[in-house]
Image 1 (cartoon, one colour):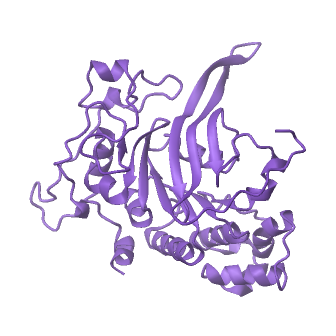
Image 2: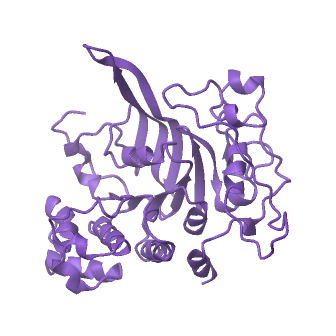
Image 3: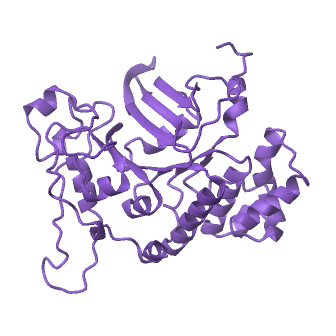
Amino acid sequence: MTQDMVLPAPREAAAGEPLLEVSGLTKYFPVKGGFPIRRTIGHVQAVDGIDLTVRVGESFGLVGESGCGKSTTGRLITRLLEPTDGTISYRGQDISHASRRELAPIRSEIQMIFQDPYSSLNPRQTVGKIISGPMEINRIEPEGGREKRVRELLEIVGLNPEHYNRFPHEFSGGQRQRIGVARALALEPKLIVADEPVSALDVSIQAQVVNLLQEVQRELDIAFLFIAHDLAVVRHFSQRVAVMYLGKIIEVGDREAIYTRPRHPYTHALLSAVPEVSLTDEPGAAGRERIRLAGDVPSPISPPSGCRFRTRCWKAQDKCAAEEPPLIQISGNREGHLTACHFPEDPTTEARDEDIILDPALAALEEE
């Protein structure tokens, strides 16, 4: 593609069809060293050949430990970072290496909600300026003017339209995140990448923001890539879930399959770490065994050969070191439930759905 070329408008995708398709997506960050001449001595393999699909109007959760590459994946999809390899296809169109000019026709359709509601808003701009900024950049003049549209968006996200002329420091964390949501909605996107949108908020405020995002999704039919490490929040919000470990997706499936019949040992261990609530002081009253993984997460600069989880896995054998397991549907899995493991967990040993304990505020929303 040339620098002067503009991508044509992508075709419309019907409900249930793929909106976003990622194949072999890779991002390596160079590690510099040496003196007096600095040179590349290695690479941080932040994201290493992942595949995922987000359908029209779907909420897709991406979970994993801190540092596994979740946020980098989100920034690659929104093209805030340039991928090292792989393809990103949006509505049937390859945008993997498109320039800023080439991305212009579809940039407004893919928006992002950032993790930190304190640093993601310009403290020198008013709320009105922050939310209307995307409209100004894209030269969009809504009916009735930008100010009217901003006040409508403030009302949609549960803020007072009179907050138009206030500055970010005058708001709480939850209110600031609502401003971030309003900014993401300003251009009427079809896909929102929500990068840990509630991790910096109190539990009660988390519930409000998650509920807000669900209402927005239902009313506007927006697809979400919901990135988080809180399993309870992901379970509440997402229809399908992918589990990520050290730059790789190791299991993906619908919410019920992942949370009640996990096949990958890492997913099983991750779910076992969710805190339980017991009403008695008797030992073992919680009724679920906690799996404690040995050792630390390996360095992404020099990941283990074969299966990357093998250095912490209680089921690892010689084959795990010699051969990387493909992400495929294995025996006993329902359709669409993919696992990357040579020796998966027994599907007859089901986790109990009630073992995934929601925070009280989220549990209240779950009952509604």
